[in-house]
Amino acid sequence: MKALTWNGAYDVRMENVPDPTIVDPGDILLRVTATAICGSDLHLYRGKVPGMKDGDILGHEFMGIVEDVGPQVTRVKRGDRVVVPFTISCGDCFFCGKGLYAACETTNPDRGAILNKKDLRSGAGMFGYTHLYGGYAGGQAEFVRVPHGDVGPLQIPDSALSDEQVLFLSDILPTGYQAVLNAAVGAGSSLAIFGAGPVGLMSAACARLLGVERIFMIDHHQYRLDFARDTYGVETINFDEEEDPAERIVAATGNRGVDASIEAVGFEAKGSKLETVMTNLKLEGSSGKALRQSIAATRRGGTVSVPGVYAGFIHGFLFGDAFDKGLTFRMGQTHVQQFMPALLDHISRGELNPDVIISHRMPLTDAVRGYEIFEKKQEDCRKVVLVPGMAA
Image (tube, rainbow, N blue to C red):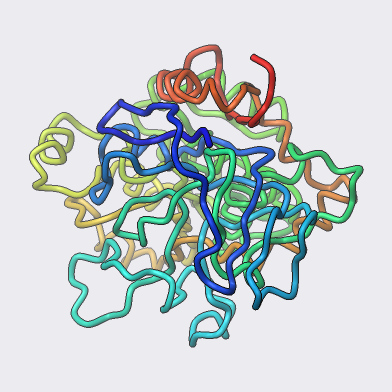
């Protein structure tokens, strides 16, 4: 089959690789009908995440048709159309029993990203996301093996719903939704969203769904801000034009700050020259600029929600400011399986339209070009969807 493989920083290739097969009795074999490039994939593309090996198949946002099932699979059958969550969860462990699927204790044989790990069990394995998380082959391919087929895949029985309408149930829509729930906002609330990428846009959509009244969105790219303003009615701030967006947000909210901030940028947020040097020298794990702005923009007693990916340590965290303001922090990988059914209902009723953010639709065989466009923010790229078998 054809699949997109990682072969070093900025070196991804469309190659012919062996077809996957059923390995465990709980597996399903999926024929991929749509997959997407996620902002988190760019961390891998840039070589910023350890644990990648030459030939690893990328991609953790995908859906398709069930081609075969292992003997223990009972919830799905051949021919079912399903969306697959990016985390791999067993459904039976301590954390899965609490609905905390991203913390599944059994699906990641590797160490995970925690530095001060002790004997802590690793969290869930992930598709296409390094050998820190199990080294599972990803879904930017024609076929993929999906472990625990009775736990993850969500059936899409409504043939009137297109792949594009439901594809983002695999990651960015539940991630944006969990970010808003973690922010503890609702009707009449105010919210700042740092980052107008796919997760930031899905956060804005879910915030509007839940009745958030006022949303500030901050980003470096004006075309993404313009889209967010026109689509979700947000108030935009360009990070390149405003030296201190938090100062403007505080002034616009009666010198109080917003009820909550969502930090949807992650560890590659553009920081100071010093932070950039320290990060390149591995003296710092991440830039703290977006987190500092989130802390500064949020009112006393408010919440900072962090769906952006972080690893390692951060200097200049301003923990004392967070303490003085009595802030709550909520963060972590998304418990996708917990939210998929309800979000599918919202899509079916026309209350959420996640597909509006798609800017590029390309054949899977053009995936290398898709990564280049997304990485360089060319052609006003917001989100790339790849379709196996699509004509070039």
